[in-house]
Amino acid sequence: MHIGAMMFAAIALFSAFAVQPVMVADKQLFEPTANMRTRNEILQSSHFRSEPPKRRYEVTAPIGKGSGKGLPKIHGPADSRLPLVVLDAGHGGHDPGAISPHSGKREKDVTLDIALAIRDQLVATGRVRVALTRDGDGFLVLQDRYGIARRLKADLFISIHADAAENEDARGGTVYTLSEVASDREAQRLAARENKADIINGVNLGGQDTEVSSILIDLTQRETMNVSASFAKLLLREAKPNMVLRGNSHKFASFIVLKAPDTPSILFETGYISNREDAEFLASREGQAKIARSVSSAVQSHFARRLAGN
Image 1: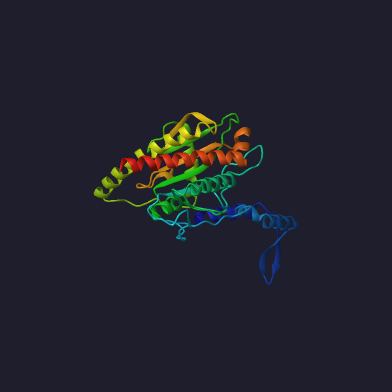
Image 2 (image 1 turned 135 degrees about the horizontal axis):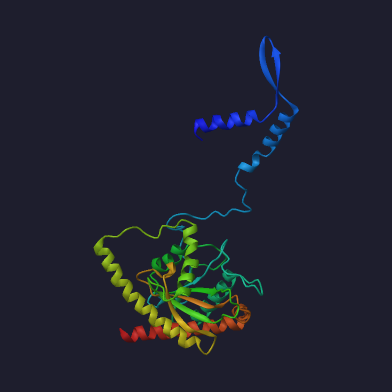
């Protein structure tokens, strides 16, 4: 506060109180009246009002480019020539994701159960290897999720989620692939919501590249986006007999987890946890098995096509 303003405030406060003169050793002092003491006591007791309100809880999360943890276990045949699929169960730890208003089920729990079911289905085929970004209730920043896929040199990255909407009638699965411009307002909303995790935790999404590097990355990413879109169509084809899908079920959005430039990636919104029927389906063993069969069939068809193309 400016010194002049402080003096003015002090004078105003002083003049508001009644005082009585007292002579001590030929010097006139001022003794506060009972009224003045009372007001001072009130001011002192209300000092806490100037302090910021205490938080009900605090969350500590890593800040920076990632946690630096070791890579997850790879399940399936010990043959490095087989394709590797990385499954990413969305949310986790202090981030529960969406919560069903009907059952109280949390997205982080549902997505983990679905990811484990998909892993088991894929491993049973003996044709692919599988890794999970998380196999328990742990928190991962978004960059770590696709970073694991890149470090493992994965051939396919699948992020599993369960959507939520204010309209409880909204239901059905949706597959998202990368686009720097979201295909519609809903996709923009979803991308903004999912990307908040990294904004809150201060994650640096990458520095500036040289012009040549940018061009090379752009070319690589365009090819990756094409492969991702191809797999998305296969997944929707295989999922159609097993689960409810939205009318416009292939959408584009700028999800951070889809931005690995050299790893084909999709984000699979398996249904609306805010819808009663979808929530029951996603939480049931039967529903999870149907989703797993859909993904497993699509993955096998995808790599068979890639092998035939080579």
